[in-house]
Length: 276
Image (cartoon, helix red, strand yellow):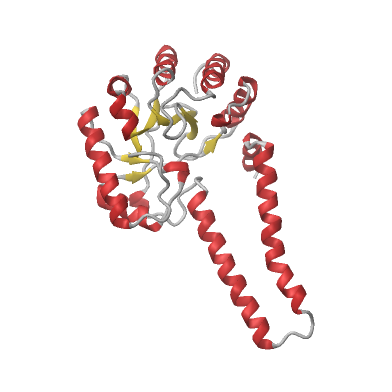
């Protein structure tokens, strides 16, 4: 419980306010119909109201399962991929790259501190910067797939997702000359169709434990504080905690606004902790 409460400190206030707002809206959606029915409601009206609320609750649960990245609830164990435990307290993991002007600077920092990380790359960016992909592999980092592009898997069919994943996996393996086994969906969104497609493509779902909202471009001090909170959390029983960062932002090929903040925070993080 204490760990969960501590982890909440990395969530920006705006996100917390938004979550509370949605919770209040959901609560009103459940309570108002019963208030309007009043004491003189018929059994048929009460049954209809209850049925609507059950459908609403199921829809909300499905949405939360799709969107909440932490954990692999309802995902078969053979589809769950994990990053190799290498003695680090925190495993740094980067999404949305590679980005010329940022990824190589991140790699320089990691090399200097002798820290390994994972990079979940977008295929169209990888094809534009193959030298960065080669460097990621050559320097011993984990290379994973983030998709052909940053399109969400929502409302996409099984066959569409399967074709997309197979194309991206094949091309990234040809480019990197190394097997690609792990996949992380855009924004962590999972659907039954995606899980089916992952199995068909021979990929395993690899999520994260804590995000620090680095793409919001917070001040380096703010980002460093969030990273330190994650670092101070106790280890899981069998693995390190995975910290999500970004060496790009979506499909945009330009150096993202959070680049300098990320690099400064990472530099100070390594200096203060010695290594993750």
